[in-house]
Image (cartoon, rainbow, N blue to C red; front, side, top):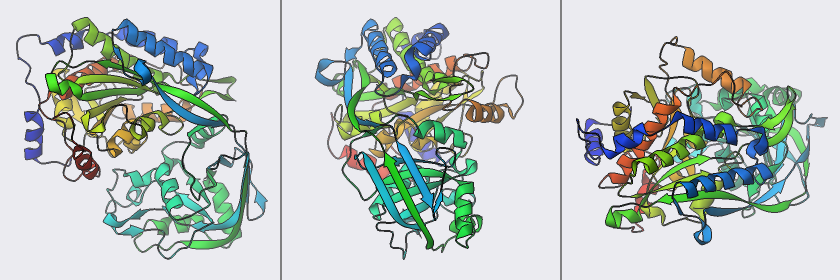
Length: 546
């Protein structure tokens, strides 16, 4: 883990020290966390009645209203727009009907590709050369530029997902993913370079999920934040085998090119291939809501600051049937995370406990469409961002069983590690650094990320890997099975496969971490080598409550 003993010690100096023998308020609240409460929320939110909680749909609206009703029941203050619990997130909604031809050969949708427009017109078309740009990364701090010497203006770039550290531990952060690995970054950089389109090359190893996940996420009804125009007209994914056939027809070898792209000195190239693509869709404006409730702090001036506890309530709605089921219930992803968050609010209510800083409970909409709800709260701040001390995220609860450890993405980035370790120890758990493990890269894929990019120290809880009474490889097998059979599929619903044994201690650790961060004398800080440190320092220059 990347830190010194001095950093660890300074992190712990910020934490309140609970009495060893007396039951403290946080102990009482932790004991009040109820598995029945978590189960009840999951049962309702993941039921067929909510139709998969798609963004901007009847089911999504019902979920938002249900969560607001829970806030009212628990006495949380409204923290949304106009003294309500609802924070508006305006969106554009559309259902894409795309075509794609590579070198004159038509591809089959959605078996071979998915494609979405980046312009808000009923028909968006591109007819341009194809340029292979490797990982599509420009990172001066790593002395890496995949666009060096290339002119991609008005062209379509073929891009690998992930970053070079996937296969070469001497580059970037090795097995620890950077933001450069994310497909969202690939789109952002391609736009900066003036490209007209992006085709991400899918392999299960580099994406960390199968094609079925891409297909389930990028087909059917889609929603986007309305944004300023860029050079990009279309973005999408193509199957590796389709791109390999395209390269071969042009006298090139895709696998060889991909291997070369992971080496320093790689030079991209334009291929003798034209990409003809179109996307027809009807654009409509709609809005979704984040649901925000505040537990006021009791610490005088510190009460103006807040710790955010977040979980996204949306899923994929009703989409392409899989094994006869078309409702994408999203039980683990993420009814369970919302259940944990609401269980913390209920436990604090039962224990009559609050922190010195306020705690804002945030149920995000639009996460599955690209972190839309959480990003909207940064773009249009729900409170001064310099007063947001930390963000704790619950996405994909541990439904696999009881563990001896717990993981949190981002624990290798900030002094929140100290609060996490103190909380875990009191629940009999050790903290595992999973930044290069099963959940590699997920820090950049959930609602904690917009907060982190804005400089706010963040954690996103993940299951541990040491399961009680299970073989050593149980964690990897359980996660792999869930990813291949349930993730972003209708089969993510409650059934014999799940257990709440691991959810209860995970939720208790989240509660304790939140209170420790709320009661600490100073805000958490980013580590000296964190990629978010500069953003954090800039955020605090704006002032704040102190």
